Length: 395
Ligand SMILES: Cc1cc2nc3c(=O)[nH]c(=O)nc-3n(C[C@H](O)[C@H](O)[C@H](O)COP(=O)(O)O)c2cc1C
Ligand SMILES: [Fe+2]
Ligand SMILES: [Fe+2]
Image 1: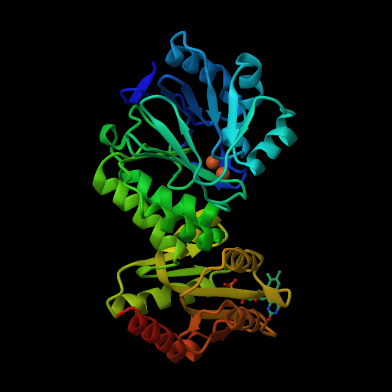
Image 2: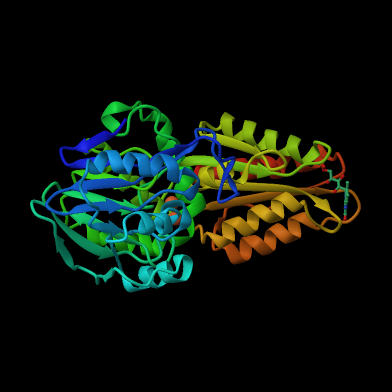
């Protein structure tokens, strides 16, 4: 059944509830949607396509929405295969379609799909009149690919934003925020942002600055609900704004590795000491079982980060090492950092965490705590001091 977003705007996207991990990396407990939209005016315009596994459903919907009209334009906001996967088939089915994109996008369309005719190259701020509606193009490179752009429809003030403002989670029944219980999408938006876009805070800020001059009534992104209520549109933009500035809420993530539970006992102890000092937002992640996408989501949320690791073959526990690299890759800033570790014959974990603390640019808030074997008594003061310093920072 074909659904409307507005009078002349139809939803032609699909839900994927079978994919186990997005990018073969990030789990999808609620699935994911690949959104595509068709605008009908004197000219007809399709915004992005869908993953090619869904071409069958997609073309059926497109035909129904076109209702006998020919397809004039395909606007490509983002050339990643989760949105561009059906372009080659689209071109064969609708050979007269003009493919609209910036120069970088169009070169990728050639590279991936061998298409070299029927291309309409647009530049930043160009406009494309369609009849009652007019499209305006904004190049917003590196959210999170170099060719990304957004398309603004000036009459209805609708922003086709590409991956920006997207989130995980299939669309169960409703398409628009007014038709859905949107509660589950907020955390999925933070997880989407921190894992996929997280590294690109500066380009996101540049894009947001450009959007300030526009009135935005509706956001049609490539994943997740269509946002139409003012309160939600503002919230979506403010989530992206806050995260791209690496701004935080008060709270602490304690991420640790453990083989036999001693490092874990230290983590629990630190958490209890924080709680005694009034800290409520405390999330412990046992890195052996926690999926990194959730750890990163919480890292993007909270101001405090405490990392613990046993010594493992004169190194960090491997999953802790992996987390540090994911933090570094995303250039996460403005965190209060503490760390602890354990060993049996020659400690290395805390040394490596100290090196990380040096290069991370984080504010290291207390001395490290290092435990030999089960020497809990000997680390009592260190643990209290670490918790005390963190609790003070969060006040
Ligand atoms: C495979 C393996 C390698 C280890 N390598 C070291 C090491 O290089 N240096 C050391 O002092 N302890 C080493 N240990 C001992 C652990 O660091 C120690 O038992 C640990 O700190 C206990 O913490 P846990 O109970 O949280 O796992 C190793 C233990 C294992 C199982
Ligand atoms: Fe993407
Ligand atoms: Fe995407």
